[in-house]
Amino acid sequence: MQTLVQYLISSGIFGRHAPYELVAAITVIVMSAAVFLGVAFPFAGMVSWVERRVWARIQSRVGPNRVGPNGFLQWLADGVKHVCKEDIVPDEADPTLFKLAPYLVVLAFVLPWAVMPFSSSLILADLNVGILYMTAVTALTVVGVLMAGWSSNDKWSLIGGIRSAAQIVSYEIPAGLSIFPVVLMTGTLSMQGIIRAQGWAPQHWFLFANPFTMIAAIILFISALAEGNRTPFDLPEAESELVAGFATEYSGMRYLFFFMAEWGNLFIIGAIITTLFLGGWQFPHVTRNVVVMNVLQLITFNVKVLFLVFVSMWIRGTLPRVRIDQLMSLCWKYFVPISFLDMVGTAIWVAIWPNGNEWSGYVMFAAGIVVGVIFVQRVIYYLRRSRMELYFRPTI
Image (cartoon, rainbow, N blue to C red; front, side):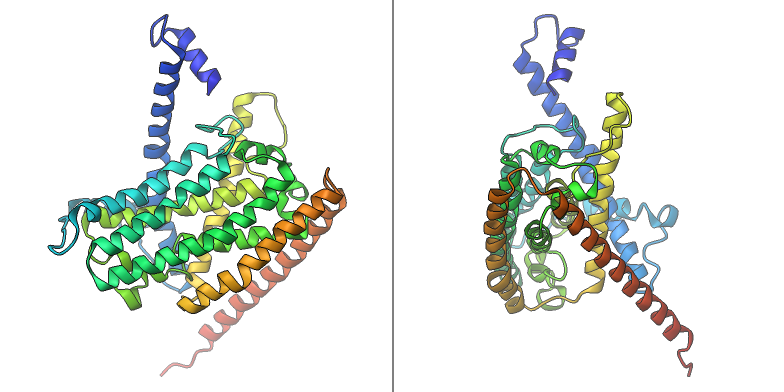
């Protein structure tokens, strides 16, 4: 960012004697608008199409395939449809809070992109408290959802808002505790600092650093799905129970905002896991060209994030919704104590091996490969069985 600002000043675009602070502020605003409008919002729309196609394949359906090639423009058609719909505010609702709530949810989706480390140079603001900022601003979601549920003056909306508040606040605890092992190992809260402490090879990722970090990564991923109201933790909007939960009384563009933020948050979830445990944008130094290296790092980061996004879709199309008591029991009886033990165990590990332990990375990586092979074998087995059952199904 500093290099770009200095180049703009020297080029004379803003005048010969333009203040550095003014040029820096304008540059950040323009780049932020480009990231939000050119990346964040289109990504949220395209993910909705991808997710519907993934669900269709899992459930032996076709999915959207009419608008555009393979139905790709369906997300754009749905967006235009919602924009053109009437925006209705119920008579008994609190109009100010009712209208404000969707924008808070979108704000919680937009703000984390400011510290998103796409590559070694592509980041809007490398804050020294980046991961703390990320977890803080995403917590705004609970404010918006609870505000939407209460201001709607509807029992379904209120129940959905209360559920969301209890769910997000509860799972913030194990999610926060699962971040501490990485902070203890790196000694920094900077997103770029955490990535630079890892290597490009999997055995140098924090996911395989020791058993405690692997468990912490799993807990953080599941907790992030619960905070994002993703299946099997989508109780705040449970259609079969609460119509649409906190969004029941919304229509038009405001209704779209809630689910645009939910789909967009999949990228944020994947980015946090990738940064903390999967090496982020780390890529082998194959060239000295800074531009080429940043492009390769950008591709690496996005491939890892999109893989986790696909896993989230796979989970949603596979698992049923849990009950509210099962949801809270999983958090308070299991995730909170386990994540606390992970933090303590990592502190002991760092005290014994302050510079890391090389062999543990290889052992954990080998164990991960074994688990992955077993999982792929089971998936292939069930795919073959489902095809055989479909082929030999008796006809009436």
